[in-house]
Length: 254
Length: 254
Image (cartoon, rainbow over all chains, first blue to last red; front, side):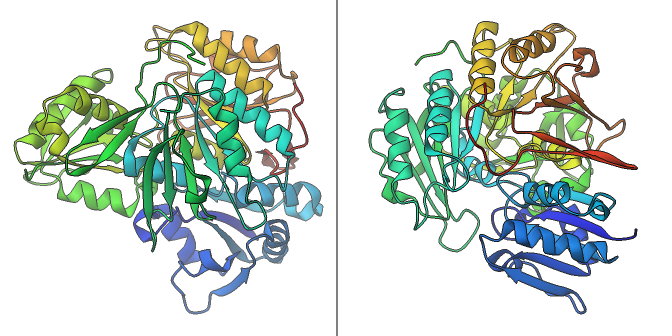
């Protein structure tokens, strides 16, 4: 079987954050599948087929790409950020597990990318400089009770928390509930960062505190980082503050 | 003040994983500071000064680079992987906070990179496809008691765990103790991945289970991923297995 499927991370923003490997993989694919807004970031090549789909069709998109590759083509699936973090790589693996035996014979490769939390962290300093976790706030695919359980576990153990998918039109209250949840365990002075559309049109970064954070500051394009008791804000005259979590930690504070 | 400090992520391996932004930042720096092995990955440019230092001198290296930049130069500090994850960005921020006021006036930028866990995950599928945490196992900068507390919190809440700095010559027993610790909370069939020197000479990937994992399989160049109760191994005839964590989760299993 000569078919090949490559799942490619585009990074969170413009072409600056593409790796050389991602560039090369995009250039050799015969067909590219992806959410329309991600496909729009990829330069059009003559003869290369493009299959845009809706944002919420991950499993169907993965299956379509696998079926195409199983016909002997070199197919790419593009993902914003890193394909392995709340993105297409898991959807493709799940389709391979559930699909026809031929899909397990395919040459499948994942090309890593800069995931949103790394780009947001880089904009403000080093809030992920020590132990941290990444958590999706979407309760479409898991119960809210489990999300609260994980938020509590992470906050009380002193992990910095990167929150993916903080809000959507159908999920308006979850981020406020998450702030309330960790606010019972962390001081109101704990740094909070809102990073919106980093590296893209409309980029906006806000550094605030848990006591002052408003969930209305986030939209679907926002990644939120909630610090730990160790995370510090360094004020700088005439410059944006730096936010970082020191490499050393003393004890659990919560 | 015209001085500038850029902290640049080189990614975990060879030049394939450099971003375009990192390439450009390396090309314009007048001087580059870094651990010798990372500096060796950066092509030499005429007129560009190079300041290699020992692996464990992060704070001193940050201070030296800041002092140099405060003299008006454009200085770069290189970091393996992403500079914001257990690396140089936090050291630089800490030096800025503790250093002379002039250092707060500097133009400081962080260039994100592919961090090791993303590269290891990409090699095997999508083990970080749902909620996960990243934890350094080094007890040089925090007490072992805190590390165990965080391991337990993460494992019982169902986070996949990426373990950085699993072992060193001075820290030979910690990874075995970590496996014992999470082994009391997770089934012996939980997938474990050892990813060594990913993207470099001597790359080696091993997929095993918590019941069979031997801490001797890891060295200083290894990143270890311990799955959650949801993480799955997909066997493939004639190919390495895929490991992934589904995008949906039911409840806490532990």
